[in-house]
Amino acid sequence: MAGEERSRIMAHIQPNAGRSEVMGFRAGVLQVRIAAPPIKGKANDELMRLLSDVLGVSKSNLAIEKGVTSRKKTIIITGLGQDRVVKLLEGH
Image 1 (cartoon, one colour):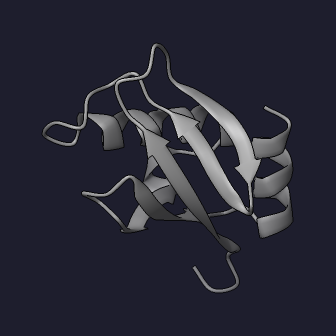
Image 2: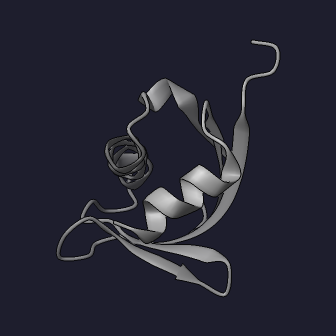
């Protein structure tokens, strides 16, 4: 959609954590713990579910741009501006 806001965040994921939670930003990189193991996309699926809940957007508005098989990921969020995304993630 023309003019729709898009944001990009860098994230570091820790799979196999005790629970899934957003830990906040460190040096501009979002720190996220994911309970799911990094097997067959389970951790990525859980990451998208968690971010969808925290940001209040549909999972279809989220995409992993880089790092599908890495702990370091670049995530695109459609429908929210960068400032709003950062505020929601820092406040969680």
